[in-house]
Image 1 (spheres, helix red, strand yellow):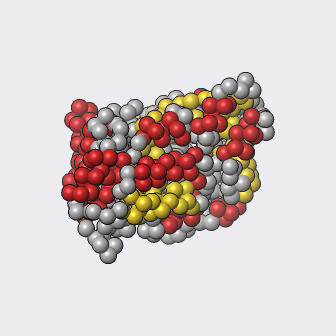
Image 2: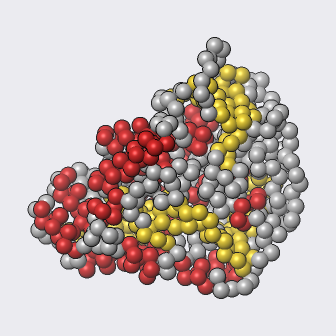
Image 3: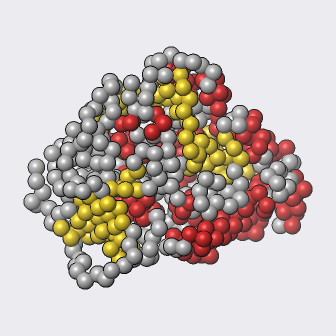
Length: 543
């Protein structure tokens, strides 16, 4: 099926651009063509406790949904296994053609599994759609620096950026807002139902979906028309099995009922499986954060509460930061499979700093009751603070023990009473954005391998947290580091941003985790997906 009925979404002249020092991503000479290599090695089964919110890229910003999207949708740029540098996927080339223009040329002859042509019009539609829908649980915030996108011919698009020299824009194109969708299938102004998506087969990734039962079973089939960088899948197909309980996930991989167990096994399960010679535990670079979020409207003394007082609200946040014992949580709950974190950016990333260690607790990472008492007293808070704290099953069954211990730590101080409750993830994602939770748990798995991914999505206006935090000074620093080309200067700005946010305490990072998968000893390729891109690729696994 052709798209002769589709108009290009705009054009700009590119002639006359002067020679500049430009950053470029270039694919193999000639581009195009069909997938290289042959699928083989039998089908694999991958298990997870992660949940899918939606298969629509405009409506989700969570790891469970994005994991599926990475198998079925194409990206302009993506990551070769083992790397953290975004390079052309279905693009033939991609480069800054001026400080505020990023030009992408598509490989010729691209198509979706339903037969529809994939061209520049679909690319323009995909990115404009994410911004236009601006779903509360979607990734539109990552496109804050995209002023517009235009098609100059059927195979070329030009992104015009608000700020020049965006250091992470290529990574953004490989992240959550990056999947290219079929404009003849997806509505422009609303989220599409999962079953309708599956029926329409608007897939041009490494796999297509053969059958789909949401948050139960997904059957993937290799896509013979995929023209991206990953090539043909190393297996004949894959099945994704969702689990409600991590113990059943552990038992199934242990007994060989599934080939690979991904997120999320408990720390105890991982330690147990490391001593089982029927399976192998694979670990990759860290990047995951577990943290608490404060809703600035509904937390104690928040802006929409009867006793609203910003100074007292800050004192409450500071007291919590003084009291949490990360080392105890890491050792008692997670058997040290997670480590304490005192930074908004994990230590593996350039520009990471640890302002939370010096600002709160005893100055060395341990809690301080005396400082918690003082900060509340100085704010004239002389009664016990009632704190409503919410957590979810999304981050593993250990979350119950994790937040029971946080509750114990806060209440043991005599300064807090904690009303601790849990909510199932799909409900949680909606209610947290509706201001239902004054203080709540979240986790973070990076979209692209850069320190900015721990700052821009969280702390600038329109961020995905929706917790009503805004500090113009922080916004300025975060935006400045984004376009600073000098590495030393940018690293300094990243440190300043973390210091400023640590004083405001919009969120409170607690723990950092590594990537972990457990597989049967006959499974190959698992290590290829545990890399700094933080993307799960079923196509690299085989047996």
